[in-house]
Image: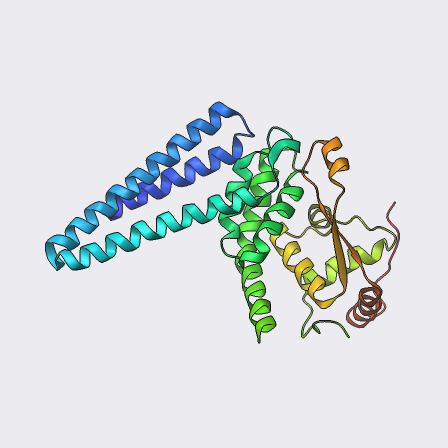
Amino acid sequence: LLTDLPGLAAFGLLLHGGIEWIRSGGDLARVQNARNVMILGLLVLFASFVVEDAGLFLFAGVGAAAVVAFAGVACVAGFFLSVRETAARAPKSSNRPARMTVDDAWLLGCLARFLPAAERSRFVAEAQGNLGDCEHWWQRVDHLACLALGTPRLAWMMWRENRRGRV
Amino acid sequence: MPPDRPQRVTLPTLQILAAFMSNLSRDDWYGRALSIHTGLGSGTVLQCLYRLENWGWLESRWEDREVATRDGRPPRRFYWLTGLGQREATALLAERFSGNLRFAPEA
């Protein structure tokens, strides 16, 4: 109960913040609000992780707790570092309209994590080029949702091609 | 010889090919335009484009950055059918939709 409820709350907060971020249309105040909600979600998630790790420490000893804590921190740090790197490689935002900001690069960077490294920057740039046509927030949400649903299969195709290329 | 021969061609891929075949002179198809034209989701369109490009049926290039900047949007990735793609698409569409398919230029 101590870990499941905060986990659900964190999921709700992250989802709500993510949708608000997409709907913000580049409005800085709304982006900031959405970001705060998402940060709160991450803090709740982190707190539930700490509680779970403490439980593990009490019942399974320091070794198990240390391994789980290290794995959790490494996963989160690796994910954010690699997303940041992908976003930095994407075309700069100087020539985009106001609503095409680094937020899009960040969201697309998360999806690009599934793809082989060589394909990531092209994927992000191409998706941004397609997003540039969306006039309304619901078109952007639809576009991003379809992209999110299609990306795992695209990733599978790319990894398969990569492996075939190496053989 | 194409780099990779298709083992099976899905219906969305055929829809994309039909869109390309509907206007052969057009060399500025991009993901979003194909998505609107065919009614397919953006993820599905990207998968089909990737697959068709791998088969050597499509070629692609980035849009001129100056043009995109002038229009105030990010550059698009343009796709067009290669000679091989045209031949294969014609044969494939005729085979799968024998007698039921008409290619008409867009209005």
